[in-house]
Length: 455
Image 1 (cartoon, rainbow, N blue to C red):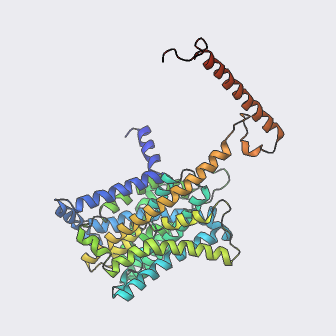
Image 2 (cartoon, rainbow, N blue to C red; image 1 turned 120 degrees about the vertical axis):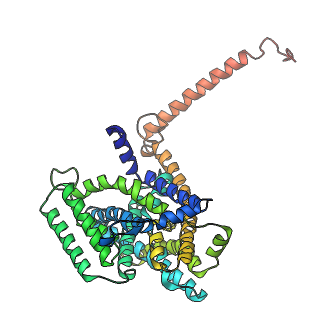
Image 3 (spheres, rainbow, N blue to C red; image 1 turned 30 degrees about the vertical axis):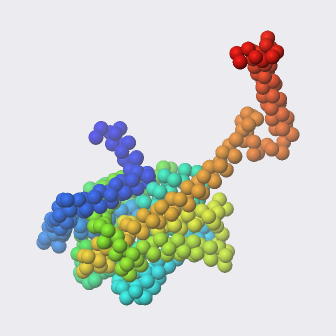
């Protein structure tokens, strides 16, 4: 593309709304493809292998999407987390307490809901982590589309919650879904990450240095048996995200600015395209609410997330010194708690890892993730719309300037001069209405006292 068009597209991809829409379109395309007459081509595409076999990188398209493309997403998530730690909500323990506790409870309660459902229903406990993740892209996109008048503090709360949620999801993947570890490859990966860190601290510049090194680190992490996305998070956390004197952007902010369009416009949508394609026939949809594994995922996302996030926030504010941001109301927190139940990208990934040996159950769990996320999005969208309408009315009230003095009326209602100006305005309007009444009277039948002309 020419430079102006390229810049326009890149800037659009940096917004939550566009990224969320692309993610949604990719998921819909995957569902249509997987349920179309050419669904066999979808399966064959997922199973197509390519790569360098000697480096253990002869992977299927599905594995490249989950292990490769999502590394870009987690790299950006790592930068976001670092920025929040050094310059955002997580910098202050007091300000971070509520969203951090909300994130922890918002992962623990869905896992507990899943375990209870499957323990009583005789299902597999392997999928306990599936409903624990919140999808940053989708959640922020819904908030951006609906919440045009919501307080900015609500977005900061959701972003902090989602970033901490992603951090714990990454730890869950690393700890619970690493089957075997190859120590030599892991040691080399650690050395590669150390070299990456040293080069950053020495302020060595040049993409031709860092991109090849990042690819080597990713390949070594993949060969070690640890999920390869961990390399992306680690490198993201290493970037400096605080600004020095005279800097308009820190290195972390600059690199995030460059990489985010790649993540939002290519990596995450392609992952959705190659992960969300499940059969949604009537039988499968019925099984989602009949099988304990899938029912546990749906209830975990819809009920567990809302109860965990809202309950954790309320209990922390009630029994500790932490306080809810004065710009927010508890109804706002409830709406965000429902929004946290959108667990698309990472939940699909964990579902694949948890039931890797059972393709049928994997597809059913993916369907459960889609349904649970859809229900949460509808509930959250409804609550957010109600709150947005209320804040819209408040904004209109605060911006109203009936006396036309350039100052909103809400700030001058105790000033006698305001009431005198309003009296003059109403008197002028009354005089104009009296004039119009006289004009109407003079033209409507003064020459016909009986009023019968035209009768």
